Length: 353
Image (cartoon, rainbow, N blue to C red; front, top):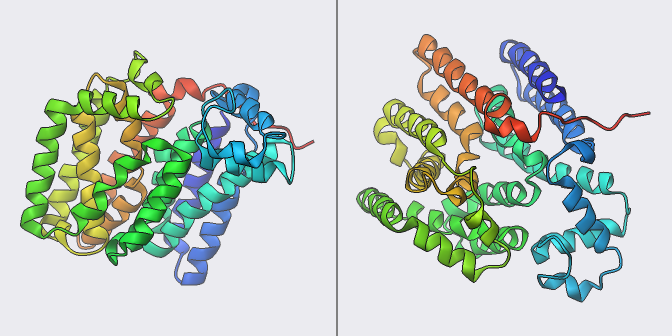
């Protein structure tokens, strides 16, 4: 229930903000208020009521007396965690052995990156915040490493746009040290830097390759990395049929509204590539668990995508509002009613007193 109350509180604030925001100062004030509300909920989760967090807490406690050098390799804690995240654990443990403090630090980094992206690249902050809430926010409460890696990669956009390959690869390395699956993001840089014709060919070729060889590629990748076979072997959570339909709806809408402008240099092209790759992954991986997890790196961009669509529909207010309503409703259903809700429906917050 706290998450539903959280959503409707932010919805109310956002509706008011959409009417009253006139200046940059107003926008910043709105973002600060939303950031603090979302940060509180994200950081004050009672770990006993949240899927996966108890395992994260146990691993955190194992690092208290783990030598720094052993944090640089896998297998030194019972819960397989990448070296970058182990180092993160170790650094926070120097401040406090309280796992709730770790959640605060993790949440501050995660949400700061999201809100910096909104502040810098969104032309409709209130839309971005709402789609962040019905997008990655809920799952990031317990899928700590992968969502942190995903937002780190999303924030690499200026390095991709400005063709700063070394900085991009360093960002990927940081994300990889948090979650190994982050390597799936590497093609984004090279796709972005293709011309329009070659980009079309590359995306089509990627679709064909993944459609016919996806499972073999992922199984090979799981064998080459540490601790990822569990995603390949798990059952019952990888159908991805509905997410694929939703992803196609986003892509078709984006293409219909922006038309040839999806290839424009900058955010338009970046988001088109992320959206295309998410759809390819989800379609190629229907019936196969890992594709849903890998698509996190690409579907997390919806909070920046909708404001772009909003901006191109300035002359058609009805269509603008209709699309916002439809996709927000779909997002709300997925986050608060669909299968993912089973992981967080029992969530409670730690009492202040």
